Amino acid sequence: MRPSIKSDQTERIVQALKRAGYQATPNRRLVAELVAATGGHFTAADLLERGRRERVNIGRATVFRALELLASLRVVERLDLPSGSHAYVVCDPDAHHHHLVCSNCGKSEDVADGELARLVDDIGRRSGYSIESHRLELFGTCPSCAAAATGTVATARGVQA
Image 1 (cartoon, helix red, strand yellow):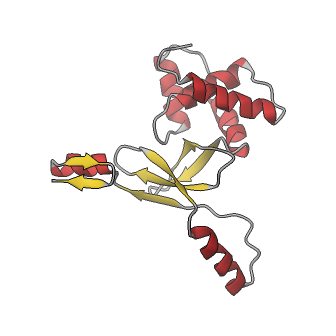
Image 2 (cartoon, helix red, strand yellow):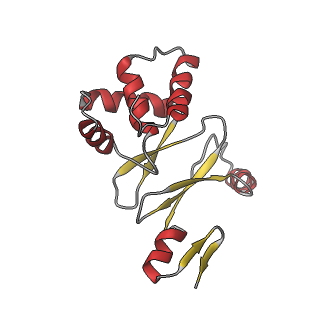
């Protein structure tokens, strides 16, 4: 395995494939390694470029098919970006959550559902809809990018001067 690849994340993706009854073919494992090596959101083109840099032979169609499969297993989730394009982010398939995505560096964080579940239930009651699912993506600037832009130091809870 390449040193830049996160083996625990790769194995988590491979295990999700196996639990769903799919074989962890060499190409699927390779896509899992490429996905695991990302930090933040990524596109299929990003994975193909990383593969090219790592000198691995993987086709465009293979990457797209694997991403669709991983999305159907909820191991990755497709993000619709403000630009109109889309990207993917690695997810925990067993925990409902939402995403904070830095528009500058692409870093993404999972955000717990919190009070949103109650709000969704209320909207369903008021509208008469039987809401089956929802998703929320919040785009902005992460504390590190905000600090870099202003020349201050980022902290865990915000930015200090």
